[in-house]
Picture 1: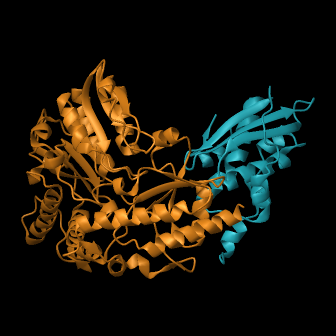
Picture 2: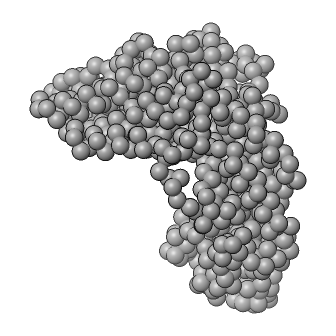
Amino acid sequence: MAVSASTQKLDAHALRADFPIFEQKIHGKPLAFLDSAASSQKPRQMLEAMTTFYETSYANVHRGVYELAERATEGLEQAREKVRRLLNAPDVREVIFVRNATEAINLVAYAWGLTNLVPGDLIVITELEHHSNFVPWQFIAGKTGASLRMIPLDDNGELELSGLDALAAGGTVKVVATNLVSNSLGTISPVATLAAWAHDQGAIFVCDAAQAAPHMALDVQALDVDFLAFSGHKMCGPSGIGALWGRTEILRRMEPFLTGGHMINSVRLDRTTWGELPHKFEAGTAPMAEAVGLGAAIDYLDAVGFDAIETHEHELAAYALGRLAEVPGITLYGPPADRRAGIVSFNLDDIHPHDVAQILDAHGVAIRAGHHCCQPLMQKLGVTATNRASFYLYTVPEEIDQLVEAIHAARKVFA
Amino acid sequence: MSDPGFEQMYREIILDHYKNPRGHGVIEDADAEAEGQNPLCGDEVSIYVAFGEDRETIDEVKFSGRGCAISQAATSMLTEMAKGRTATEVATMDKDELLDQIGIPLTPVRLKCAMLGLTTLKVALHKAKGTPLPDGLADYGELELS
């Protein structure tokens, strides 16, 4: 691992050696992997932690009294503590392991929303949301009679906050749910401000941090949110694990989301009582090895340093925006580089993003083309799809050069 | 651009149909029409058909829509293929007939793009004839058709 602590700069060229995926060529070209916002690549350290767990410490957790079960339980609970530290959460029992951010948000929407929302209540989200923080609320609004309202975007792709109080008129705001970083535009949203506004309204604030957790230091106490959701796979961890953090007092008052094994206190023929936090929300066998992998991923990112990662991504975003602006007929979406994470969405005149992505693939460049699970945002931008290049700690400027070169080739094909 | 698969995919005939689509437009008071969307990439196609006096021969096919080169070029080729044939014939056209015309290797994702026009045309014809949609169309269940 190559980091100079004094300058807080990371050496992406050196970090790439930790990621086995880069040891291959794609269509005979070096792999320029510019789709980390969809899912990140995996460092050897994380993969080895999971393998070691399976090879030396694997058994089902919690109820076993033998050595292996104890080791496995320790692995799972150490990972929980690592997540607590990642989020600066006050209490490790507030960390609930789930499959991903989508499941975390569904947990809140169902387990909190179904019992607390009534007709006339308002759920406030934004036009920037990923479907993961849009569809669950739309669905639960439909079930409860609550209404969904949308904070609009300005022309920069940033939230337009001037009309907030007007948005709350004629109803009771009960939930405000926004992302911290937009997966589509890279916009960093003012979550602390929005959380304070939500609390003024008497609402809970749910933060979708799926796109933020990989890239910046998080602090649930400083943000003063009530729930925060993220996925492990976007931050060097394995797929199939994420976490929900929630405030103890709210979690305690909530009904469970999934029921079954492990989440109980006692089961009688006529009545079941729920387990303590976090077990009440963790029915079934836990994703144990995945938790260990997530813990190892957090260790890895910690060692590189979140400040260094954030700086690196801002630099790459600035470089990419500059290089892409050279391309004739390009439209770039989103805010300036200093107010966005390492995500750049763009369109080329007259070339559909699917065709762009296909031609780029032939040049070894992996980008995403489509609506990025943000169809309401695409409608706002007046397009059906965009191209999106996204960066991470292992991204090097040469990959962006490769991207620009391939875009020129695509333009030639369609000239 | 050394990859042969890639050069094939955007071979001249595809780009020609994409840039100069045949049968682009709308038929007012069409005898058969349907809309298709591929939610995966947002491709959209609307197809309009006018029958001849025998109410069976396809006199005219037009389409409108927006999408990637593959979906739009395939639909453009399809309008040329369908004209002059009977509705029954086209409604049961084998997909390989169109794929042979397109003549390029397609990944599963791009196959859906290529099939959008044909599937939508079949829906239009079945609707006009009042015949049930065949099971085969369900292969493209991810397409939204109406």
